[in-house]
Image (cartoon, rainbow, N blue to C red; front, side, top):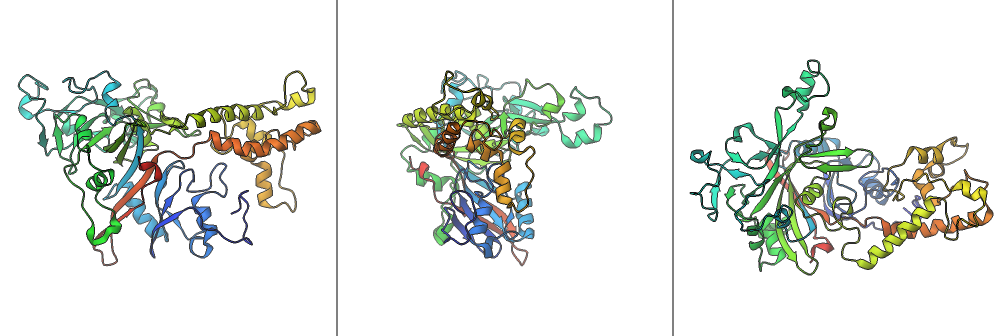
Length: 522
């Protein structure tokens, strides 16, 4: 694939920046770079994982030879499993969907000293003895009415082999009298909804539709999942004091599967912060999600999208110079942007995730300044202006072109197309005889039109000088786009493990891990 996105079959094929982690007759496991989508979508017609693999080795990974097992966000890097047959894809996909022996481990670099911001957000001092409103508290059978009473010892760590307050983000009815604290968020059970949709009026949320509750709160466990009562958040920090990050990583999830006979199992004593908080997709078109109690959502249609969600976190290391923490995340459920949302809700957003509380050029003040200037330049171009335009010397014809069709803060491929853009780029432009499909796509593509700025094919009455300026701007925009777009967020799919069966029907565990990303070495 050439730099301009055109297929270049007669040119020497270069090795793409995609590391193959594992390959056998059934699977291809790769380490996907950040900013690369899995499939062609939006403005990404060629630069997607499957397209690049297909054109790199057509005989092995060409069209119809790789099958999707799971997906990974475009801005996230890390492990992607692809199957070489539809049967294997269905088998592993079912394992992931049903959470049957499947475990995903992600690595994230977040703002602050994890997880202390959770208390700071609510003005609770560590060691003050005050309980966070989201903290689930175990109620012993003989003390149901005396949570945190005088006889309890808040400094004594106690272990309990009991069911957690939430399972897969849902509050279990059997645990209502076992746990205090936290919040219970009513959610609409889709199965109950279908059964009762003919018997209930629209609008209000009926009892039959709210038999399930999503939990909002946290609790601490060890590596076995045993509840640790009275464990303060500081314990997660203390356990990695003076411990090298690599050693802490091996203690949390074991050594890399590639170490073979020297493999070290995870230490069961490592503490994990378990966080349950429901999520919903608030805008499908723009890919925006949110998490929280959703107490402001009253309409039933809005509440239908609320899904229980749960993630476990542990701290690996903290860097005081950048005030960032390296944490592991184990998503128990698989909601869209779940880890990113949960970290933001805990007060520790991924440091460079500008969509959910981070900074686009985190730690780079010069980058932030240049990015801001580039954004201003791009906005002028999207209005039909050029670098030399001003209100005093613009002609009437040129002024007619300065109608903004691109949305505010748009980029070529990251922002969904508006109806005005679609009409502007594609209306009355049929595919002409002899025109290649690639030329037709470029002619009617919204994202290509954004690159061109003022579209001379439509506004043919603009001045010659403006056309020259616009052509110059096409090249400049390519450079400016780089500075205003995310270069990928500090979230990496580090390890996947899942239970499956071999040819003889015996159980076996598949486990794959990538190398650590460069930003993990803090």
